[in-house]
Image (tube, rainbow, N blue to C red):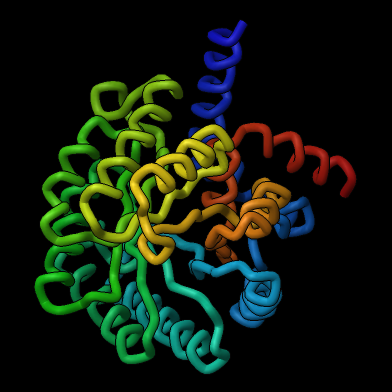
Length: 313
């Protein structure tokens, strides 16, 4: 029965990820707008809406990771506009004194056009964030961009940008080797299961293998001596992490839990009540459809919430 459930979940996940890239479904989603349950997972379409949500979350004891929704850009001028918007976001966060970091995607900054463009653009954002005392997380995307993302991260570290981190995905076979290569740099890493559709020669196809690899990566990252952000909503892995922290004596300033805004809020509140640091990824912007679909793929149970909200519309 458990094997059947995992198979069905895997099929559902693949279907949702395929739908994320469907232009027809994107058109239908944007036509109905955000009034179909999307606001549970997305702060809003504007910066002001995001700031309001971030203030409320900070007041409840949560840290925030701010992300402007959007992925690939097709022209350098579009990437330049994204840089401007992220620098403006950083200045607003600092001016309001929010306990928030910034998360961004390199394809949003032109990585698909050329790696040098993405490096120049992320450098400008990280430099402005450093001036303001803010941290920037470079998200990991499809496996085709992993090498370029890690190389850009290394370049930023080598040039004195200490306010920057990146992400490793547990569903990729290569991630333990990538972490070992980064270990001498004492990296700041967010560890996630992974949310893109990847072939079986690149990524573990079975959930159980991904879960085991995530736990192994957490142990490896703690041993590396940098900072580890554990991004999961899986209670079993959360409790394993808490046990590992106790066994290794890892101090609280070297790790935190990260979770998605709107996903398992009762668990988020419980972890805060137990005294753990929890940072919520809070996205905003008009390009919410691909983000929402990947969140549904990570936790297909959220599909029923979304469908219910659509039915009640």
